[in-house]
Length: 127
Image 1 (cartoon, rainbow, N blue to C red):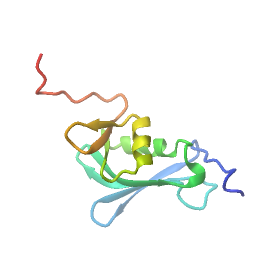
Image 2 (image 1 turned 45 degrees about the vertical axis):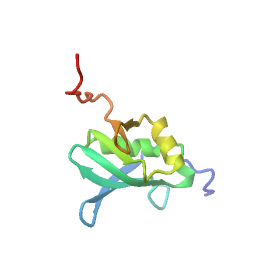
Image 3 (image 1 turned 120 degrees about the vertical axis):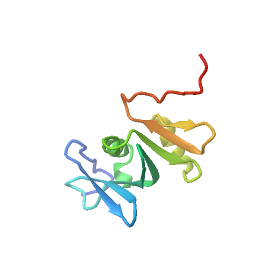
């Protein structure tokens, strides 16, 4: 099998979550026809938010919806996915912007809210 011709079949992929050490969670996406996970996201749970420390998608599966599928899996347990700007690469920041992540004012974080979820109310907003 030539790696450049291979494409993941997300309809048959499955996801697993592992706990590493004390509190770090690792989400993995597997495809039956690939010998290792095709996508990984690791981070820590913080209440209703999952703070992403990093992610990786194998080269042949990039731009095929793998990270979006992993995000859907994360949203099953969390309302918000966030990631620090200081830890992001130029490509990672471009990906987050293209996927609908928004920069949180005053914090060096990008965050994405669960689709269909209610937006948090701003109690300081004046009417």
